[in-house]
Image (cartoon, rainbow, N blue to C red; front, side):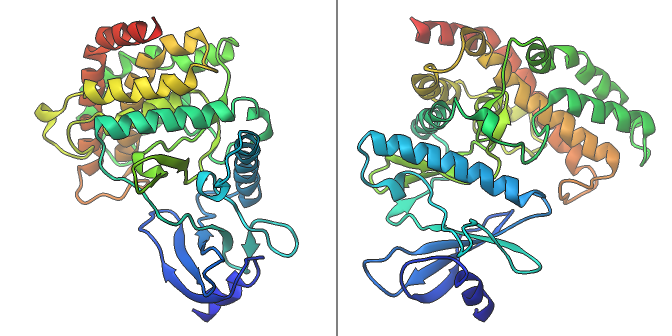
Length: 361
C-alpha cells in the first residue's frame, strides 16, 4: 500500500488519497482504484502497464494521449459537458508525462468514470450498441492514423500469420506436424483468399485506419440506463486495416459456443449478432468507409476466425508457448473450433452480402 501511495503521489491528482483498492480482473495490466477523501474530487484508476507485451511505453502513451485528446476536442466542440465520462483522461506527472517508471514497472493514472458499468453478455441489443460505438470511435479518429505507431506491429497481418504457420510446420520442432497434415492442407486451400486484405493494402486500394483492435463488448462503459458512454482499454489502439475491429468482434460474439469447446457440431455463426453489430457499425462508420471496405465486411467476418485458427495451430505446432493450455491438445481444439466457425461464416457469406446491400438502400 505504501508503495502504491508513493507511485500515486508522482501524478498531479486532485484531492487527498484515502484508499487504494484492486479494480477489475484484467489479464494484462494490474489495476487499482484510487479513492479520494473529498466529495468534490474524482477518484482515479492506477494501472501498472505490462511492458513485456507493450515494449514501447512511450509510443503506447503517445497513442492513447493523441486519441483521447482528439476525441475530447471533438466532443467539446459539440457542446458535450460531461467530458470525463465520455472519454478517458490521463493524469500527468510533474514533468508532464502520462506515465511514471519506478525502476521496475511503468505506471499511469486516469480519471475514474463513476456511476458506470461494463457488460459481459453479448445480445443483439448490446451488439448493436458495440457496433455503433466502435464505428463512431473509428470515425472520430479517421484523420490521425499517421500520428500513431503500431504498439504490436503486424498484430492482425494475415500474411505474417501464414508465414509463421508454414515455417513451424516445415520445421516441426515438437513432432506434431504429421498428425495435422490434412488439417493444414484444408487451411491452405483458403490461404490466398484470406490474404486479400494485405494484397489490397500493397496495391493502394486499402489504407490503414485507427482501430481499437480489441473490440469486445466489455471494452465499453455504459451508464446506469444502458447508454454507451465511451470506449475503454486503449492499449491496442493503432493503425490497422478496418477489418480488425469489425471482424474481431464477430469472431467472439457470433460463435454459438466458447472458442475452446470441442463440441464442433454445436458451432454456428450467429446471424442475429452479425446483423445487429453490422447495423450499428455502419450507422457510424459509413461516414468514412469506402465502398470497397463496405463490400469487404463479409470477408472481415470470415477472416478473423480463420486467422485465429492459424494462430492457434501455429502455437500447437510450436509447443504451446503463447497461450496457456489446460491439456496437451488444447490449442489444437481451439484451432479446430475456429476452423468450424470460419466454415459456418463462409456458408453465410451470400446472406451477409445481401443484408449489407439492403442496409445501403
